[in-house]
Image (tube, rainbow, N blue to C red; front, top):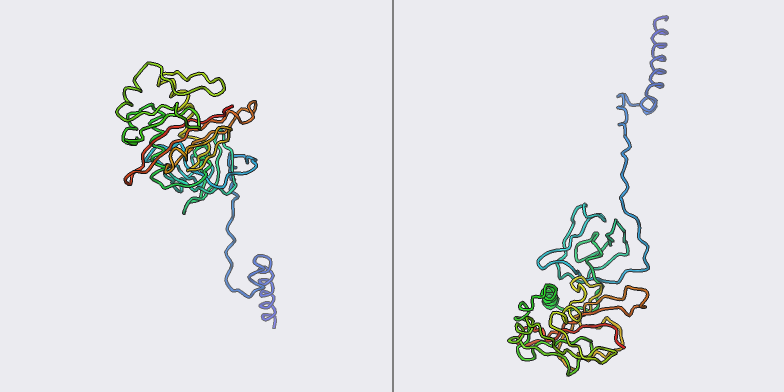
Length: 299
């Protein structure tokens, strides 16, 4: 009898030890000793070095600007140039849709966008507000013309100039008989000349615009970096002023692309805007450049 009591006492002691060491296992009736839970070491996460940028609203869609031909705008997984590139948008990309999420990192403004099957962050400096729509080949042609104008390589425009209507230069958005019209055979001699040419009349004063081709180019053609314009109008007028736009009357079959910078200096109340309009006309399944029109506020 004493032996049985000792055995039972031993069992009770073992049970009490088990309850103290492994309460879950004993109470659940498991015979195996449970493995201890893995130790979880907290990982310190570095905060993203960006701050939220408060803006009133983004435009509803954008086009790519400022990207070289045959190059792409990178779409990043995070608002940082060092983050993973999750997609690419071609230099002629259009209909880029912003979500409204926007961040500032240094001097770069990042915006979260969607384009076809790609979503991610892009540099807002390479996007322009898009008004209207045009076929891809016309958008590419416009960018090719701008690239030639930026480097003053007018000889590169020769294949694009209409052989009959030639190329009209207008210092203001209202076309008139004073505009210079240059045909392809005369373009080389004109661009290389140091002699002043009358291009029309200055707005406000009515004095003749007597400038060399180089000076006219600087003041009334590529006076802003239109390859990286803020707003683009695809066959839509996006600038505002009191000068009548009669492009459709002169070129009834023409298509216009307007590259626009809105006013930036508060002292002028928006009247310091600038635009460059390129007009193309179709002929035998080809588009030809037929007018280069400068735009600014007129009296």
